[in-house]
Each structure stands twice: as C-alpha cells, then as structure tokens.
Image (cartoon, rainbow, N blue to C red; front, side):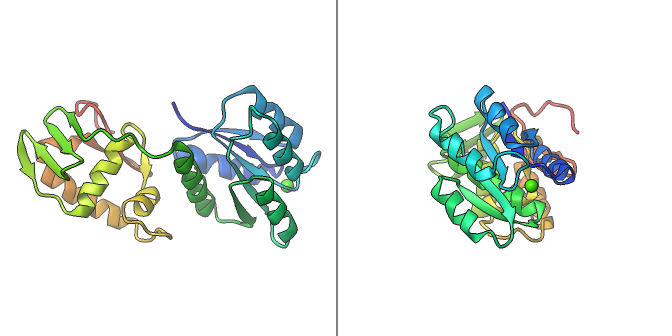
Amino acid sequence: MAQRVLVVEDEKDLATVVAYNLRAEGLDVIVAENGEAALREATSRRLDLVVLDLNLPDISGLEVCRRLKANAATRDLPILIASARGEEVDRVVGLELGADDYVVKPFSVRELVLRVRAILRRAEGGPPTADVVEFGCLKIDRAAHRVFVHDQEVQLTALELRLLTTLQERKNRTQSRDTLLIDVWQLNTPIESRTVDTHVKRLREKLGPAASYIRTVRGIGYRFAESPDEPME
Ligand code: CA
C-alpha cells in the first residue's frame, strides 16, 4: 500500500507542484486548503505524514499541529512544517509542539521531497531483515554479504551489494535516483544522478540472468520486481 501524505497548503499553485512531485515518488497525496479541512482529513483516514503550511486562511498551522498532537488518534502522525522565512518563533513553537521537521519557504521541491522521504523512512523503523532471500535464480545472503545467481557466487563491490539490497528491501516500490544517492551512497545532497545509472548498469551486467529483477522506471529511478517475467516498461 502506498504511503499517504496530506499536504496542507492554501496557495493552489504550490500545493499542485508539491503534490505532483510527491506522487512522482510513488506516494498517495491528498491536499487540504485550510486548517479545518486538514483536521477533518487527518481524523477520517489513515495518513503517514502531514506537510503543514503555517499561514492558513482559517486556523493557523500551529493550531492544527497542536490539535493533531492533542488527539490520541493523530498524536504519532509525523508533521513537516513549511513556513515563510523570518518566522523563527513559529519554527521553535512548531518543533516544541512535536513537529518532526521544518522547511523554510521558498523551499526547493526537491528538498521537500527528500525531507518527506527521510521522515517516512524513520517512521517505518527500517526494513525487515531476513538473512537469506531468494527470488528465482537470485539468492542474496545478507548476513554473509554474498550474492548467488544459479548457485554461482557473483562478486559485487560493497556499493553494488548495498544498491541491490536496498532495492530488494523496498521491492515493488520505485526508488528515485535521489533517494538511492542518499540511502546507498549516503550523500546528504544528491548530485550526479547519472552515477546511479552507471552502477545499476554494472550491477545488472554482473547479475546476468537475474538482471531483470531490477527494473528501470523511466523518468524516476529503479524498482526491484519480485517477478522477472513482468513486461519491460
Ligand atoms: Ca499559506
């Protein structure tokens, strides 16, 4: 099931751009244009994160944050606050109220997406950890850091192994190049997304007949497919 993000933003153009980019990350996005609508959405359906503008036409974002944290049903819902520069007091209050992170407008959408990703990952509590996983001819022994294709060991670099296991842990979910640069390369600021392509190419070459488990998702990134027989995109 896709993770669901509520974007609370009364500036329609900004809300559209943010929603578009979060959807491109495979997230399910709902937009609320004011505080009351946000509270209604948050209490009426399962959400994984709220992106909350502070300057709303009805009740303030801080009040929305306060109410979400006061309600047992929404207390644990992560909140990323977005607000205009210069509202330092709001920033402090927001974090005191229990918001998880804060971006200052005008923010780059890319930065926002990365922060959303980071919060969702923390909230997920990390991937499941079976020691050995098998998909057809591909076997990954995570404990021993070894990979086999048709029982023949494939020699991967540490980075290639991390790339493969990261994709496998998130199987069937598309990972953007930026996400991979942060999680596999452990870069704070993703640069050179071609790097990902180069390494995926090399990894596929080494995997040979198992290469098709790693699918290209055009314009976004890569996805580990459980079945290698799915048609190519
Ligand atoms: Ca606003």
